Length: 189
Image (cartoon, rainbow, N blue to C red; front, side):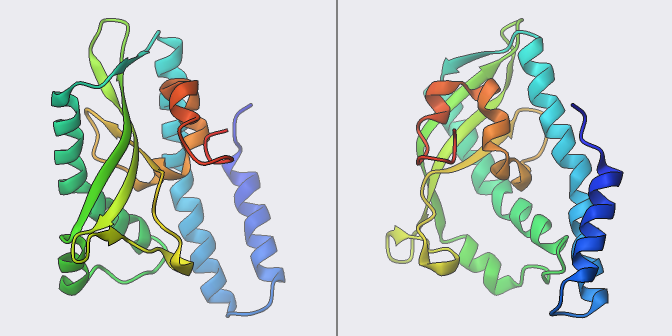
């Protein structure tokens, strides 16, 4: 069933206007930001469906694959995150935030390589933890939750999209049941 962006947008706008709290303009800005993300969400969902229909396969990642994923994560992940956050009115990353970001490392719990029917690499399903290099400890998220067992899809031809991290269940058909089951209960189910 196709997701109807217009019905969703109208529902969200009405719900936000009925809620109390911040000003109507602030609410509309948040709604507008969510609606702007929907085309990319739908693009990634369609990507998964198309790849699966075309006969994609999962393979164990090689050391070269892991090196490629690591290089891409180190060079693109934070910018993708800040780009995503800026869509919701968060200010552009300051030099200080970027400096903190350079002190983050990624520990890969599992990487599955995805190939098309012609054995061409499409991308990588990645299960990772973020590690703060300043103290060697896990980076803490909002509410002091460890950033362990995170998901992201690294495509071979497109820049990293932070939005894929929210679509772990949608990527399950592409990444495989074994990969999805490597996440904490509820995240990959």
